[in-house]
Image 1 (cartoon, rainbow, N blue to C red):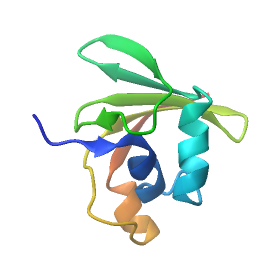
Image 2 (tube, one colour):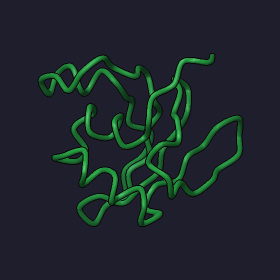
Image 3 (tube, rainbow, N blue to C red):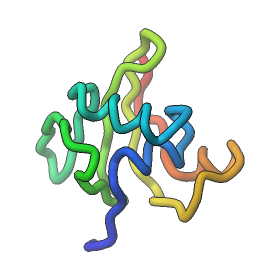
Image 4 (cartoon, rainbow, N blue to C red):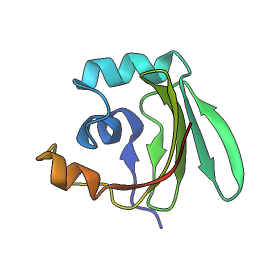
Length: 92
């Protein structure tokens, strides 16, 4: 699976963050953990790529969100399209 997408772009397309620059700052703060092949790592560079099958863990609005990436998306579309990019694993 070599197709990937920048983490900041994916968070923006999936409508977790309002703008791409906010998504970039969010990642640079180290607020996102990436899970791939059973190994979790903290992301701090917005250019890091995510792939279908990866998991992401981050705090948003005071809640811990864990989700699996289902699709990379082509654009920032309407909310229904954005929800198809991921599956929620756990919310605390």
